[in-house]
Image (tube, rainbow over the protein chains, first blue to last red):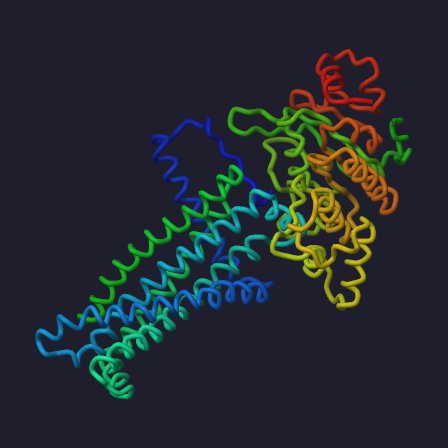
Length: 271
Length: 259
């Protein structure tokens, strides 16, 4: 029989191969790997859940936009204001737009956007799918001839994978505007001069690496939230745990990925 | 209350045949060799205490769980031998009414009913979809709830909408998981009557999982009692409960049923 996507039996009485703890870790890793493999298997095979993907893009992208915009704008103002005294010591306040652009594009925008999305979107996906699992909605979908994995998981992961980079770009845009407001107030720099300096310090590699990083962060957030929610159990307690675990795990993975990406980008820069 | 008069085909054409079905969860042996037949047009009530594997049984029938041993034959097809596509096709002939109703929280009643229809019946016009939804809601007497969200419905209404959602695909077999659980006696009676109406109007063959003896007596053409992982007693309501020699059956009757 085909493996059921909704219910599984766990054999807790089985004799451990190494030790119970290691067995659990390896079983969990193999479970995650098969979950990811199923995603890549389902994502390219029709029928495509276009309508649901668009709905999820709206949920992830448009609904996160106010928070991301506000955070980006304030980050731009605060970061510019806090950086000014250090540059003023060397009489280099004219370098502020360059400093801000490098900080925003290379690090702040992808990282802060991913962390905000982990909290807002990751927990939402974990709680929603967890709640659907414990109230048998996922099983109901399966018995009505619908592939719940494709409808629920693939649509959400695709949405986060495309929307987090878009949100990161909005973060950069609003951060730049916030920074300009502060620079204009203090240095009376014109908008065109500010824009010119802002973009002169960043390269295509910076932009590309930010987009690629954000795609990876988005995929991670969607995948972790979906995995935790889809495998939720133990009633309402399980739903809470799925939501919480989605946030903690995706934030942790985002930091790890950021560190790895830094090494890779530095290596590319050195070539 | 008089027990229901048995209503099933004299020729006893089987729609579900289960043989030697076994399933365990760790050390817990839930089903220990179950044999069961569901015949065309009958309502078969599966009785048993909580945790005896009643819901597990119908999840195996619909392919949601995989048994350790045994065969489940539904409408002439061995469920364990079906691939994913064949299983989906078979599932369209089986309506599954969940204990929790399992309505999709993020959708209105109309969207809940449309969901299986749009996905499984191709080339339907908007007018045909609307007509099917309205008819399904009329069947369960809840036409006025069409634009409501599941959170705005009562427990009984949710059960009815859940049944309407399964009926929209015109299934040949209905599986009801604890249809009266958590409902007051009057609403429970309405649900029992609805199960009988569904049987008569759509000529469905049904398995009703319950531990509610009033429900069993009202809807059951035949009762199968799950005791220690096997169906040790099968027959009409009277055959099972009149002069029960088995202490477990006697206890079930005395503590569960007020006539």
